[in-house]
Image (cartoon, rainbow, N blue to C red):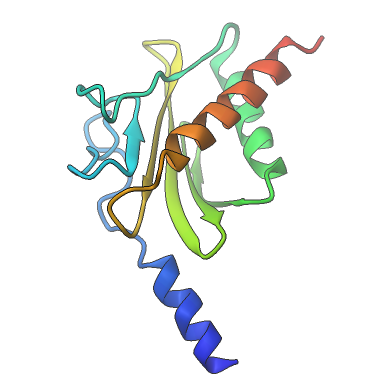
Length: 141
């Protein structure tokens, strides 16, 4: 059992220390293709933020609910305008961040693998899954 625990811990990687909001921005993506961010300037890493209409706090609460319902997601840090989550894929852990950008009326997103070079598009697909659920939940009466 100890060997398996060690292998799982090695695959999870260590939490990066550059996460969080600095000057209204999430951390930049590394050069590797295993990260997406709505604040990235290059097409390789760029993904659209989560759009919403209506009350920003209600939209952010809806996002929190969507994330809490996912079996692969654990909320690690939470404040009124920021969520940091761990997203699990089999043995690997990715880091997700969501920033309520009140002036722009969107939720900025970032998702990055802790380990490896390529994620085969997993972070992008996962954010799009979250977007679809978030958008769908916003349409319910």
